[in-house]
Structures are given as C-alpha cells and as structure tokens.
Length: 260
Image (tube, rainbow, N blue to C red):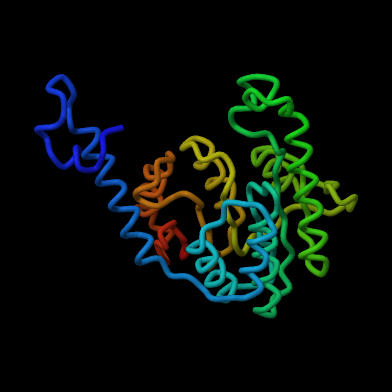
C-alpha cells in the first residue's frame, strides 16, 4: 500500500496506476476518523468491566443508541437481537434494561455459523477446526450470559434469523440453549440487527422485524454507518425514505423509530 505521503503526492504514484482508489480510501479513513470524534458514548463502570472480559465487537456508539432505545421503549413487549456471538451485546442489553427498570424479555438467535467457515476444515494453518471454534464461541456465549445476566437471561434460540422469524410468526414453541421452553411471537419493542451484514440478509431481517415491531418501537443496525464497508448503506437509504420510519440518530450506526 502507498504511504500517506505518497498518496498526497501524485508525482510519486506510478503512471500506470490510477490514484482514484487510493483517494477514495483516504476519504473513507478521514470520514471514519471524523465519526470517532463525534460519536456519543456513555460512561459506565460496569460496562467497562464487562467489555474487558466478554469477547465481542460492540461499538461504544451502539451502546449509547441501545440505552436511548431502552429508556424510551413504548411498552414491556420483548427485545430481539439477531446475531449473538459471545454474548456481549446481549449482556449489555440485559444490563441496560435492568438499570432502566424495564422488565422486557430478551430473545436472541444465532446458529454460530461464521462467514468463511466454508473455505476449509480448519482455521487457516492451525489445527483448530471450524466445528471446534463454533463450539468454543457458543460455549463462551453460554458462560458469559450465565455469569453476567443471571436475572434477565435472554432466551437464546439456535436458529438462523430466517428460521427464527418463521417460528416467531407462527407463535411456535421453541427450546433455547439453556434448556428452557418458551413461546415465540407477538410484538417487538426494540430489535438489534447484527447478523449477516449483506444487503439481502439485512433487508430480510428488517422486513421480518417490521411485521412485529410495535408503533414507537426501535431498530438499531450494526455496521450501518455511511462510511462502513459492509453492504448496508443501500438499505439505510431505503429505510430513510420509508414514511413509516424516522431516523432517531446516526451514532454513527443508524437507529430508527417506527412512527406509522
């Protein structure tokens, strides 16, 4: 990769190479830097300790948006999380509900099948198989939830989001990974979408949630900022033009509220 100095000096770029991709990348990096400076965060000692011990990729801006949504939930109907990994976001949601005095149940789904696992039996050149890695992450989720959220343990259903919402819409009975049986379905007050980040999958998640999201409910999309390399920018533009929703904040990811 060209150095920043070379990128700023077109004379140092080989004549056969176009500077446009480098300039575009530089603009993206500058945009991301500006987002870091303007992102709103919360200061909470417990969350600091939680994020030290619980593996995950939860941005501080998302935590701020979660707190806003939870403090303004329209009712006591469930909160739904798509994509769980090692349980960090579920534990944060559980904690934020507790300190806000809310009793909403939490439902989450994940099949712990990761993008790239189809490329070979093992993780790179290691001796660790994708199957063992999957089991390790799933067991980490169970341990983290049981330790950090014993009083408001999410109902964790081992399904893809498509499978989960099919059960949700049928008001089906489901068993979670903690050995509990529950009935799915009904209205949703807040949904956090952090599953497959491709446009097609995220749009299906949005449509499925929209069927059950109550008026005044919230949806937060992970990795949805305007400068994010994932495929959600197209979907965010579509939802912004949807008259049933309004943008509550970009921090830098999008939080929407259902208004009609």
